[in-house]
Image 1: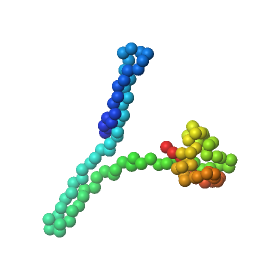
Image 2: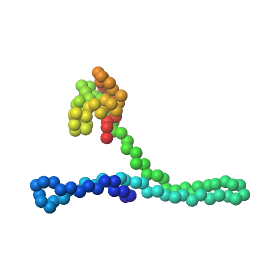
Image 3: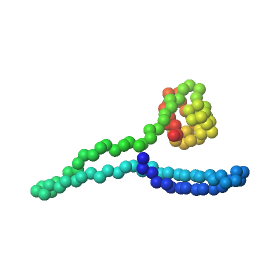
Length: 111
């Protein structure tokens, strides 16, 4: 795992004398690989040696199929554990007031 330290804070809070609180933030980096390029002198054609496939770090969005009687508030409560996140679901799916959804519709959920 390749990381750099982006933020490192230390402070002392009241209550416990001598106790220090640390806050640290990291940034993850991908491992780079160098490929070998060979050049044919007669034809001038360059070829690149095949390396290992890149790791796919993309996050696939979580989806939900709307059932009869669902509303964004209840979906946020059941799927995300916080009903107050319903505006994020609406925004992610391009829903505007009156926030109409239909049974069988597949919506994306925020990560």
